[in-house]
Image (tube, rainbow, N blue to C red; front, side, top):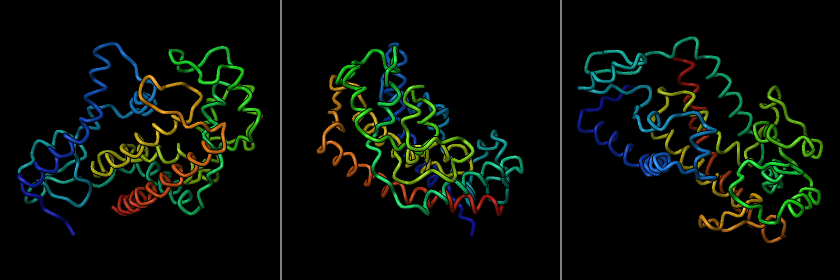
Length: 283
């Protein structure tokens, strides 16, 4: 069934989306104007390639006709229809992306969350390294202390895009050796990076995914990133981030509790993206 939105209705949705997203994009613009960098939040705009201007842009998703919205025709995905404009069918060239996203997210959703990694991927990225990624921020336990933590616990990272940043001496310590080709077989819903990546898979389907879903996935990625870096070896207390001391039993318990909550929060977003892929594949 096609929904028809009158101008006041879609204007209201668009304006609410922009106001929501500006909470994240305005501070980024201010930092960039000042030449400043943020070791936690900039990741959401540098590692992930969706530009702030694209995140601010509102799209209703498929099955919606926007009345009085000829301005949307400047984007080739839209077409005129009786009563307004709507998204056209998905171009065939984009079907492989839709099918991959569906296969990955469906496989991930079918697995039970595994919560025993304790965020050691960030520690493995600086293990026995001469340089660190966030050189402006000290290691909370120093280089030697950080290395001892890595050597004291098993590393169980299943996410290739985290594993590929491990230092050469850390990679053999991982209990699995993930590759891009086995991503569908290995990804699991307890992984923080799998949760953050829901934002990536949402914007990969732009503009065919409702912007409300993109923003929901971004909000999840934002909150997960905070835990990711609080549990990292860096001392970010000057920015107001209290450490999750995963080198202690209490810290590991806290990490696992928060990790489980994120897995629960990610599940309905993952399901909505799978459902959207089904719609797009059938369009």
